[in-house]
Image (cartoon, rainbow, N blue to C red; front, side, top):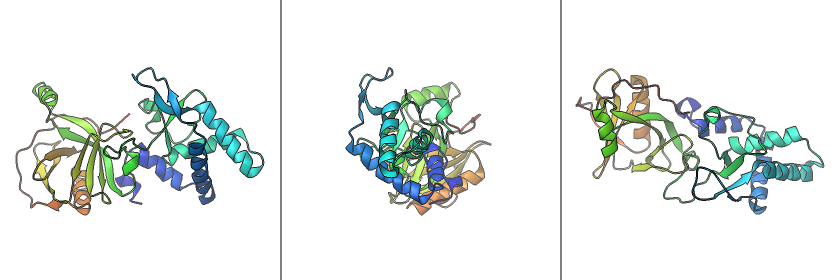
Length: 265
């Protein structure tokens, strides 16, 4: 897997921790996933922020099933051991806490077990709009970026001095795509660019505008990074995933004035 320094965001940080677990435990987690799916524990639940019921499993039901599976295998287990496997299911990317938007989950790597919480499957319901978890395999670069204002509402903000907005991006060499998400825990992709017939150009305009313009015949997107080093890393990643590098040709770009730290909470 690509060095974790190139893959920022909770999905990759959790999976990096998962890979550090004993291989025997990882194998047990695979068995546990199959057991949970076959047990039909994922059912519709009410969520106060959604107009529809969310297919999920409640924490107490999840823990009970984990305890059941481990007891069948080892002829007895402990609550602490069951909690470790709950963590492993999250770290491995099988399930995710429903309330990922809570800032406390941004860097959380353990202690996910909660009897009152709801957990959802991370796999997207449609392959046309994958989740961040769906594009983990094959990713060579991931992290927060700033996008130049393009939509009508974004341009309106630009007139007020907001020239860009934060997004989360993943460069996937296996899919040969640049994927943009609303956050590092998004269940759906907001935009995808095929990199096989795409060019990438470095652009500079001001202290904070370490930009890259990714263009194809039908579309383009401009992203801003936090430093020249990051700009170079993302450019190299895009090229490794299929984009063609243009010769350095300085040009005017949307200014990313007063960029804030590129963080998600």
